[in-house]
Image (cartoon, helix red, strand yellow):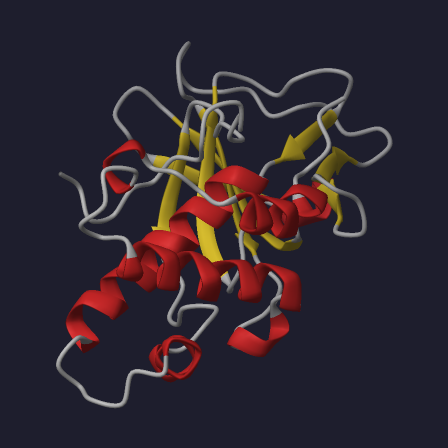
Length: 208
């Protein structure tokens, strides 16, 4: 029986990551602290710290997967076959903080950084976007498959308190729920209580 379920209850469709998306640098901190979860549970000893720390990480993974968002600052690479039309790339995992590089990859795996002056990033939309500037032709990949990569940074900020409180509370309650029901039959099915889903639901990235 799994102690760290990563799926919601039946009927809760998680946001799926696009193919070619790889995490380069994970978040340095979790959106909630061990002490916050222990305070919620009224746990005063350190006996369960290892278990609770793992549950916090699992809760963050579920929150990010369910909402389609990045929470604490993290870096990703999106690999594409070519620049899509019409001249705009939508970048997953909002909020987008920055586009760090556009990279052209050849058959020998050599990477060439494309000039940043050729593009403009829109960090104010969800999902964030990267567009070619007027008069700039798309980069030409050096191979047919996976010849173009976009490195970007996403998340609400570097500190746990930068993350919206609704998401933080959902994580605290979910970690606590898994801890309190770790021996129950519902844990293995990855059940997420309705009140926690209600906190996550408004934060889901809208699908067009």
